[in-house]
Image (cartoon, rainbow, N blue to C red; front, side, top):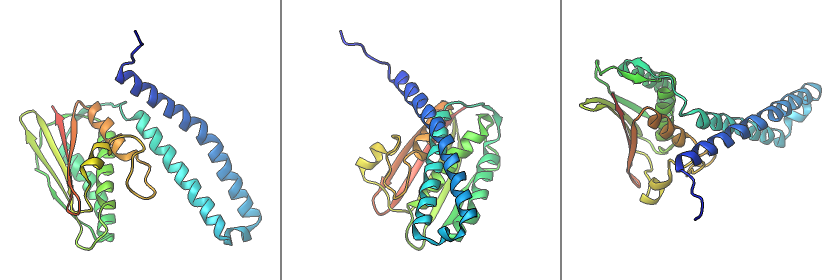
Length: 225
């Protein structure tokens, strides 16, 4: 009989491969960036070439991609501790609000003063929520954009939703958005939502999505106490 591989084992092997890949690429990339800086210091005139800006932008993209690869490969490594979800969610939305206001996007929140304490890794949950906020912001390309973040206590734990009135997604797109390297945005890495899924599942939680093209998207997180 053909040998079968456990899906969980396949995911772990995939994450390990990505981690090794990111590590092997990061060092020569850093060296390349340092050498380019030395060239610019010795010959400032090269920075006026249009191609120079393209080179720097591509290096920054590669660095961002490596950072996202590292986040993805480490997403399931959490250190949960009793945390106040209300304070954590409010901290995330407060930090994101100035940038959203600058972009003309209204951020609305409905966060109860008190929510049940549940074991969370604050750093990883913050990362997951910021990914959702960024995804929502990037889906809005029209005036009157808004994002709504809601939280509520449930008998089984905690519910957090992030909704927007952006471009929305088709049913086919919704099936693939949590897969690594799948993106429908220009310049996207396709890892933000994959990281978010890994973080939520590592907390014994779940995340779902509802979306309508041209109307918007709602991501719903359930974290069990």
